[in-house]
Length: 178
Image (tube, rainbow, N blue to C red; front, side):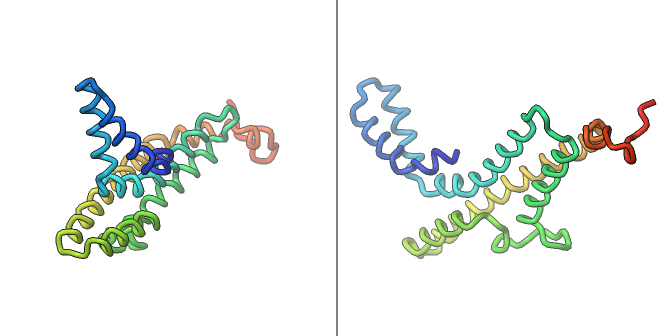
């Protein structure tokens, strides 16, 4: 996702030229579709909003693939990730934030402001609001999915953390095995 975002303009140029030079109808249609998607500023905004969230999920995924990962530490990391998603959407009293207070990320907000400066109309403001609402739904779904998995895995993580070498080899805090 990050690579697509970083190469957005190059990809757009590529698919513009690919549409022009392709002779097969099916390939030409696919190139046109991708060109149109890359030309739509709303799609770019979705990528700007989703990229940091996806990168954090990828980072967590890589931690879970380690051979010597500490289950307790993994649980803490996923718990912090859930809290991070929660803080983007909810205030300290667990009340859902107003759409203008939601943390969509600096790059996303910068891109929104740039678009609004270039297209200062009521329609442009409405389109940005619609994009923000969809991004907010994506963040809410991500938070919900992490919460669901976190709650169902809590006991497993706690049990596995008792098998951590740090705990087992410590004579003071070593749990009873039998």
